[in-house]
Length: 74
Image (cartoon, rainbow, N blue to C red; front, side):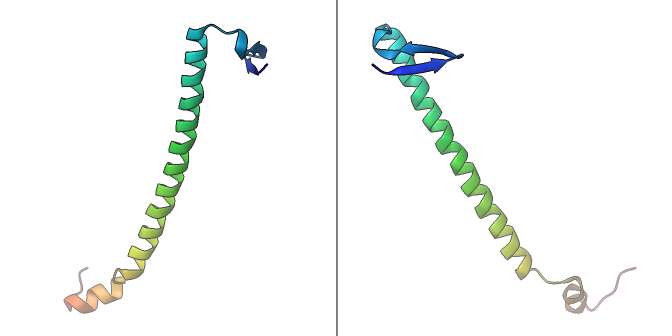
């Protein structure tokens, strides 16, 4: 006997109809997919932040930009 709790009510999964079991299976699959997508978002955000930090290190400073142009704008 396997129990699942939905809205604070426990159900015996073995007593569910075939259609209810199919929906339950899809619900569990989509929950897993959502968790994986959330992890993918966190990984992607971390990578984006790292690229931004590394890019800023490579950009010329304002003084370097002025020296490269040899002009000062007011």
